Length: 74
Image: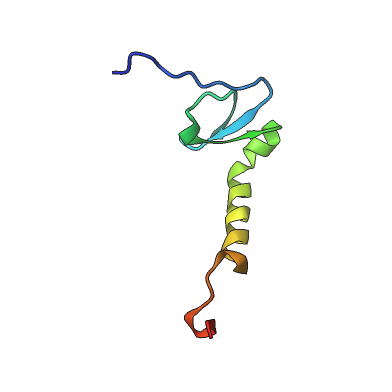
């Protein structure tokens, strides 16, 4: 058991999306490894998973993030 518990620090008005509890929290309440954020508004935090899916799709289809196929390396 740890002697000291690290406190999660945040600023009032910062919003986070907790991946573990699947909820929006102001604070943060949960450890950084379990959350997305900070977001400026509760609404932005509520859409964190949707935003992540959209960004992942953009990165997966961005040719700058992929190596060229072996055929094109001449």
